[in-house]
Image (tube, rainbow, N blue to C red; front, side, top):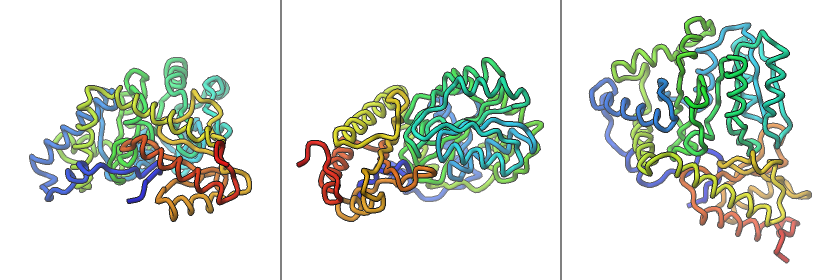
Length: 369
């Protein structure tokens, strides 16, 4: 079996697969209602929030769209903070629905500068909301969301929408403590489940914004999700098998006592990965160790080697499935995912493969003659 080192989808444990292999139940019946309420309650614990949390049958991008269309109106002035490909995507979604987007873009490999966000909000009082990606997998960067939220909410009292698809479940993100209005996550990341489910939390401030939001919506209308949840249902047919798996996986994560053990594990495995790549003589995209992601590491492909050649060799000769660069980094980097169901042995396999593959492609890793 291949060693799947993508930043999503990530490997799924056998016991989660087993939990998914149940016969279908009535998604309008009592058994499903109990599952849905249990899952929502456990997700509130995982998100560290008392806000409403809903599970959507969609990719994480669907939840990003839901965050935008349920809280904003066409012509509304918003600030989109981006440090890479997925921050750009959040901005594009808002623009597609007619928001007047001021994009604040930072160089690849750098985290968003909170002071620049503060200045942007000072310079443009018409801004009503801020969009930000917590963890950018295209560059392997985690933004200082706590500081950003303190500025956006504490100083300027703006609506804050957060893409936490590749961080929640792996990296500390206390929704209520940081006063985050809408936060989205995806099942195929740190939650150890297949793709197809998205989770979204909605604050009272966000519900207030929803009352006047004029962007068109139907499938992603969160007011419908809230109404249906009151009856223990989803407004549309849920991905039942995925719900079984996510219900089991979240309980499994919480059985460790709290999420702090999960966060500590991800920090440890991330540092192990970064140190190992640097020891091989590779250059990381993240320019600051303090802002390097604990779920994915991006490294530059050595000069004279194409990303296609490296990734193909890792796949074909060593059964290592790594990821290509995205956005402006396309062709320049490769990425190693280390979130969810992962061990140091999985990462060691990557190191061994790189030590053997890179010389064949014309680059001598450090310590390899």
